[in-house]
Every structure is written in C-alpha cells, then in structure tokens.
Image 1 (cartoon, rainbow, N blue to C red):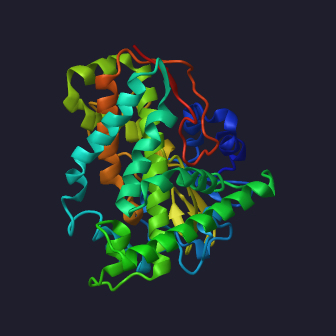
Image 2: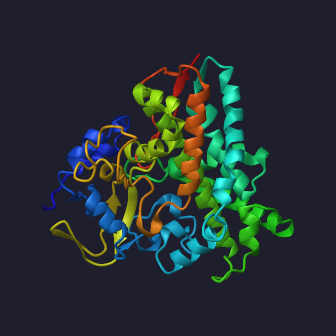
Image 3: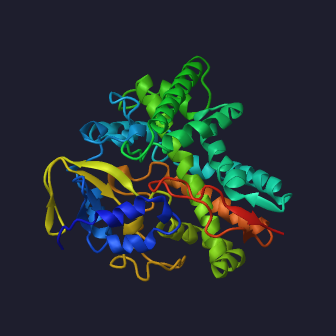
Length: 405
C-alpha cells in the first residue's frame, strides 16, 4: 500500500457537481488509502486507516496546531470548543459537559425526553398533513432539532429563527477556500460567529441571575470534581451543541426520508415492523451520514500508516463516509440493509471525539422517521436527486420536496 498523489479525485469530491452522489468517487479514492494532495495534506479514505487515526494520540485536533485552521473554529484560539482541542483539556471539558447531558451523572436525560420529542414531531406533522406538498427540510427536519437544542440550552422560542441564519453562515465557512471563495463569504461567517457568541454570552448572564432547568444554567453553577467552566468555555460549549446538535440532525432526517423513499421495500417493512427503526437508523448512519469529512487534523509526530509515513506537521483529512462504505469492512457496502450485522459505522466518528450528542441524535431520528412514515400517506419525491447544500463536509439536501396523500 503506497502513497500516490490523487488530487483530482478528492478535488472532484469537493466539487458541488458531485454532491448528489459522491460514493463512486469514494471507491476510486479508496484505491489509495493514504493519499497526499498537491498542498501536502493527506486524505485518508479506508475504514482500517481512519479508525487507526481516530484512536491515535499523535493526531491532533487542536486548532492552534493547524497551519490551515477552520475559519468557523477561529472565534477565539484562547477558548476553542472542546472538539477542537486535545487531551487533557479536551477530556476535562467534555466530562464537565457530559455531567449535564448524559451518563453517568444524568443517565435518564435523553430517554426521558421521548414524550416531549414525540409531541414536537406530532405537531410538525399535523401542520404538514394539511399540505399536498411539503419541503421536508424547511417544514420538518429543521424545526424539530432546533426546537430541541434550544430547549436544552434555555433559548427563548421567539429567538429560534435567528439561529438559522447564524448557524447556516457558520457551516458555510467550514470549507472556505480563499483561492476560490469571495472574502464576503468568510466575513459573513465570522460575523455570525461573533453575533452568536455575543447572544449566548448575554443569555448566560441572564441565566446566572435567574437560573432555570437548562444546560446553560447548570453549567454556570456547576462545581463538580473538574471545577467550573469559565464563561468563555460555557459559551463555546453552547455554540458547539447548537451547531452540531441540530445541523447534523437536520441532514440525517432529510437523508433518511430520501433514502426510504428510494427503498420502498424497506419503507414497507418499517410500516409493518415499527421496531425496525432502531437498526434502520444505524444503517442510515453508515449509508447516508451527515458528516462526510473530518477536516484538518495535524500530525504531532511522524505517523506510520498503511506502509507509509505521514510526516510530522502534516494536515490530515478523514473521509468518514468513504470508510463506512469500505468493502473490506462491510459486506455489499452500497446496499441499504437494516439487517446488517456488526454495523460499527463511522457515522458519529470515533475515539475521544465520538459524537457527544449521539444518543440524543439517534432518538430524534428514530422518532422523526418513525412518525413521519407512520402518519403521512403515500409520500412521493417531487425531484430526485434533490438540490444539496453546498458543503461536502456536512452533506444533506438543501430542500426535499415531497407530495403525499
């Protein structure tokens, strides 16, 4: 297994014209599991090599080590989100956040939200049922998770619409390329980051004086074994949860509706066997994940991998969606199969940065897809493929129009 330059393949994957179906290009990319690009970065595309790096302490996630940092992570290099730093500080901040988000300290939080999540979904479907045609993204997939994450953080309902523009602008600069993109795009994204952090900072101050039963209030008053987060760390954590907590879930719900409408046999099985939804969502996370690429990690030192060596200081990109379609790991990987066994996909990443909100996202998608197809009669795609979002990193439909009834 040798390193070869395959810049054209990866460049094609990044090109918007490939967004609707990048999977044939992933197959081509996997011919060179560790591929150096023209700019000296390394693209990793096979399951074994990706998982090895996800668990390798010599691969840094710290934006302060990057020669090409992500603009969306650059609000403050002094207080980056914990997904963008390394141990031991990463581990400490993640533990502090997890105390209020899941096991072992709040083990019943996610499952206890099931009735509330179902009620939100039912209300959205009630509004959809009166329309002959709906946009699954705008009418269903977006408002559901943003309502949930804003409730968790204690964001007033009347402020929720402001978040859509802020989050979209942040996501839009994740893959900003100064050689290709207008500077106005970066300026808009950076202003959105600043506006959102200022808003969250003000909300934190109000919660400190009038605490409630929300995550911001709990973080502001927590004095656990790891100490207390600074205000800047609380705001960064809230920003991470807001962006990651709804942007990826929007894409997964839309991808799930699209996938099931393309696989009518599986859809009928789901209607006959509602319990299939748990395995179906796991297969969706493998087959059509929301996060396709983990960009811009840095090698702390020389990293031997696949009969070659990634040099110290090199930038590394992990193509998770390619790894989850690797035929050396998954039998018949291009088939959507909810009965798939040993489905250790990369849909939520892996290693110390395994998706923080994975349990909540799983439940949201299970409820959303289960209720959507239980209640909407004979849904049909208006256009296939639908228009996609610009980003090759967080991939999903921009709109998904469906007729029903």
